Image 1 (cartoon, rainbow, N blue to C red):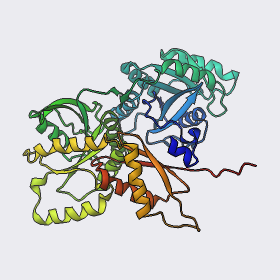
Image 2 (spheres, helix red, strand yellow):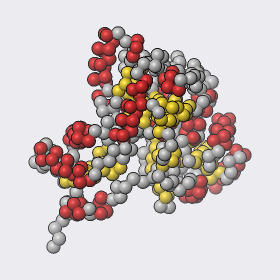
Image 3 (cartoon, rainbow, N blue to C red):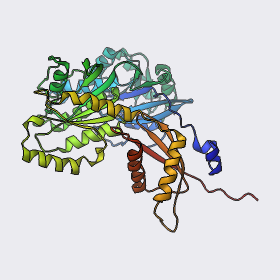
Image 4 (cartoon, rainbow, N blue to C red):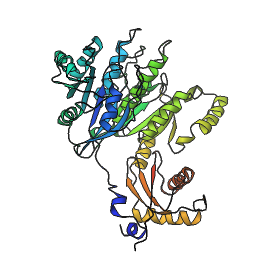
Length: 462
């Protein structure tokens, strides 16, 4: 870039801003306290996953990037799974299944000092059922005396157990070599684990009882989805090809979760996993909210998950036909206060029961996808940035006034921008730039990512 050179950035600083295909995904699974997070920290080479000497510290699936022998892959650290004393083995199995199904290969971690337990055996069945490649890690083998314990894990029938000490690093190199053998190379351009093309993928997400399955049945014009009243049902999210608005769409339903007494935390965790799985497979998220009830914290948390996943977003208020004028007034106030983070998302008011305003759903989805895929030519973007900086310069801080020198759109789906600046750009000014980008170019229905690279000061050459 000639402009980059003029402003003092070299090619190495700018780096490769082109879109890379998604990296292979390795899911780390196992029962609680077998050392999964310690092993994750060992593989990624830094202490990021929270580690504590008690089971159940990791609750969410957390993703990290890892590199071994020049190959990059994504590592998913999962929570530990164990058959609960309340008999929630169905919920446990479903959680394990999700971690496995959204990966390209599985790293199954077993505590070699304890040996294979009933829970380990249950997880083996899930892994076999998935058909995913698996590497068996015999963890906590700190010396030669533990090799015999590791050898006993051949009985699991998953092939060679690799003896490792996640704490001390013993055997981790051989384990990583085995992992790379199981992981596929980075695939050609795909999205969400599926090839580009075909029906657009729509995730129906929302908290329990908002009517996700009812909405899916209504748009399908038949009862395709049965809503199970049990929390922790082991069925997969339902993928349905549906004709709507003259096009075929793939709808991904995540209903079937119900909050029950004494199981609140587990059900919420399960719902979170289901929502994450649906988002990973989708291009656009339709967040369903029960308009007849006060907005709940879970509603805003699910919207945040959709935004953070980088998918296009449509907000649909269900049960609109049940609202009286007073409730509609208060709902507008709640939306202004609690959903300020997604003011850019198309909004539709529908009734899954009566089919009211269902015809508005497809235009809203199409608008969000259009914004999600929008690209701005570099010349036009920099003309816009130049005018913006001239009219509204960054505030002076500490006697200095950083400037945005130029910018580029590094990618779409969602739109990602990199701004090159002479100094640190405050978060408030970044939000201002995002707001003006939306005013100028639209970007309806899509989150926007803005990162800043600061020009390094160069010493004078003698």
